Amino acid sequence: MRLTVKQVKEASGQSVRTLHHYDAIGLLRPDEISAAGYRLYSADDLERLQQIMFFKELGFSLADIKDILDSPGFDRRGAFLEHLELLRQKQHRLNGLIKLVEHNLEALDKGEKMTEDKMFDAFDEATMEEYKQEAKERWGNTDAYKESMRKTATYSKEDWTRIAAAETDRRERIAALMDKDPGDPAVQAIMEEFFKSICEHYYSCTPEIFKNLGEMYVADPRFAKNYETIKPGMADFMRQAMAIYADKK
Amino acid sequence: MRLTVKQVKEASGQSVRTLHHYDAIGLLRPDEISAAGYRLYSADDLERLQQIMFFKELGFSLADIKDILDSPGFDRRGAFLEHLELLRQKQHRLNGLIKLVEHNLEALDKGEKMTEDKMFDAFDEATMEEYKQEAKERWGNTDAYKESMRKTATYSKEDWTRIAAAETDRRERIAALMDKDPGDPAVQAIMEEFFKSICEHYYSCTPEIFKNLGEMYVADPRFAKNYETIKPGMADFMRQAMAIYADKK
DNA sequence: GCTTGACTCTAACGTTACGTAAGGGTTTAG
DNA sequence: CTAAACCCTTACGTAACGTTAGAGTCAAGC
Image 1 (tube, rainbow over the protein chains, first blue to last red):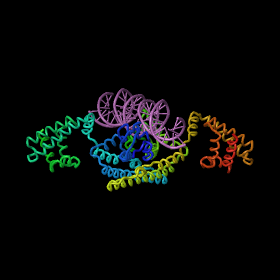
Image 2 (image 1 turned 30 degrees about the vertical axis):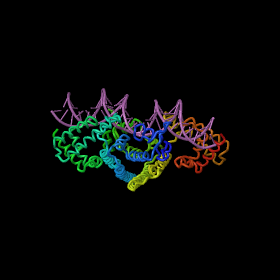
Image 3 (image 1 turned 135 degrees about the horizontal axis):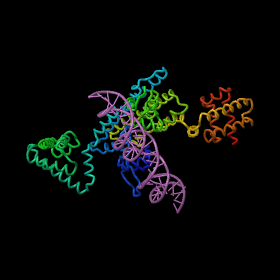
Image 4 (image 1 turned 90 degrees about the vertical axis):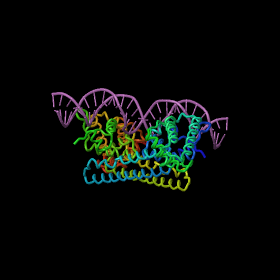
């Protein structure tokens, strides 16, 4: 069942204009557009909207929210846990503010004056900002990722199939060489190919980034499974091969 | 001891630009301006800044904050109590949001879907808004009050003494007529005078506003005491006389 | 007494996240 | 089939500052 803007407004409390705005900046695109151009939102869209509202509540800018939600590393469970932590942090700050007001009242009744720093300490948002920064870094898009997005935005469907085919081909060739050493010239030749392919198609890759990418293949299960499903142990083989290539450069 | 912008920034956490801004809109005028034009803030200014930050934290607009702080009925104790209540309200909302996230996590783990309204209920700001509205009304300046401020801003000291004298005179004449009926022609003649005086000197007064003004004389102790100190029961006598005059119009 | 660096000022344009019309199609209940 | 209730895009407005830019000021040290 799809919802119109008004229905979403009724459910979420966000104004129609806000929905338009989120659509315009690509933060929340309705799942479907009717023949007449009406925005029609799905249940998934509502979930995304909820996420948006949480992040907004926590003080993130819409641009940051977009980066986080669209990041390939985003997962809902992690986000919820993050929300929980940040909300608790916020509550802690509020408690401080309440104590400050109570303190104010007391001082007023006793006719005392407060010291300057105590007067404003509880307003401090530094800790909050730190948490937020952490959150952004945890999922946020690195500059390399953004460059990748820019480059790939113009790719056609044919481009993608071509690139994907080359990728699949490379992987199979590597899988066939896994009985050899990761430093074997044949393996390294494919690494060279791989490295250049990234530079060309995605983002300007340095050896260092390349090495980190290899680390990610074993550290991050979302990447690892792309290789482990081809042949067990392949993710780590890739990591070694990529590290050797990067070090030689 | 006076503080420069940087020192206030250091103490309060507000940016220098923010202080400039508050100065520009008349929200926080430094107590003193040095010969070179430097802003110099007093301890009282810091207290006002704290008030501003509390109200801002609670979601009031700068214009509203200005109205409240500059309202004649403003008192610091009442404001602190207000802050306390609103902060608690905010904490309540935060608790709701935390529960919502916990609920989200649970639903995610069980693979359940949530109902639409439950998804957004906790974000609701209506209660918060109500409290805020109340606060604004408690102290806030009505439009009529603002018009009055505009009109009276240009009055000279002589204007004020003249108007005040006329006012005192009228009050005494009314006090002398309190043995008669509020609807008595003699009383009503003074009401006519009073009504016109308000229109001329303060704000464009309608009969309805005039009637409400009368209600305020008994409802609001700050106004009532102006009349009760002349003669007991006079506030209510004024109310009746004003109501009769307004109804005849 | 003069320089230098940290600090201050005003003026003015930029930004974020929408609000608020204006002008014009679309859907649906009666 | 029409009127009310929705929906759309376009575009300018607003709040609360951020961010230069250009220029004056102050206190410390040589």
